Image 1: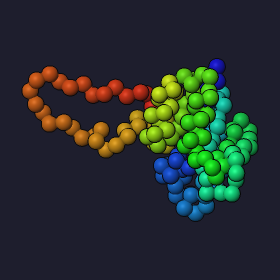
Image 2: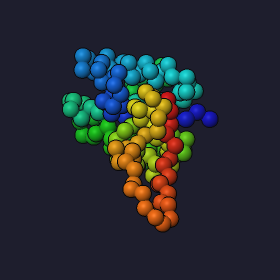
Image 3: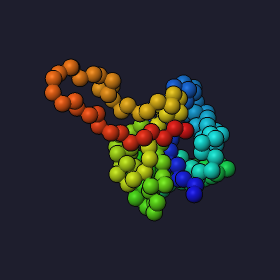
Image 4: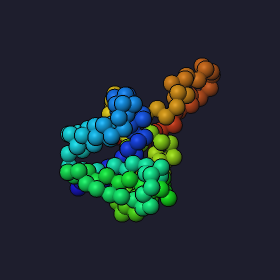
Length: 160
């Protein structure tokens, strides 16, 4: 069964070094490169992909959708942010457990996990390393006597 991949477009562009460098020259080029990366990813070749871009700064009064191959592209309207559109997509997905959300936005990730979806982000493409969230994950607690504290269990990071 194919997964549904929902991508927080501008969030991934801003968090990916390659895409951010390209975005500084041309936002259109960065969007095109993101779509190309998603379309060329062997890990996503059998998946339905929806990329959501924030259109709240535009004069669009409602979401505008188009397709590029197997990728659906949605620009949110000026009355709704991309984040709220992604959450609306999640809430209307009958099989959230078969949905993957690519975003480094904590609120979006938490909402996706709350629906039973899997999450990934820009770093999972670049390095394949798990999402750390904040720098505090790398700080070590001081040694002390007594029972060892177990680290919080994180959901697995989706690599793309």
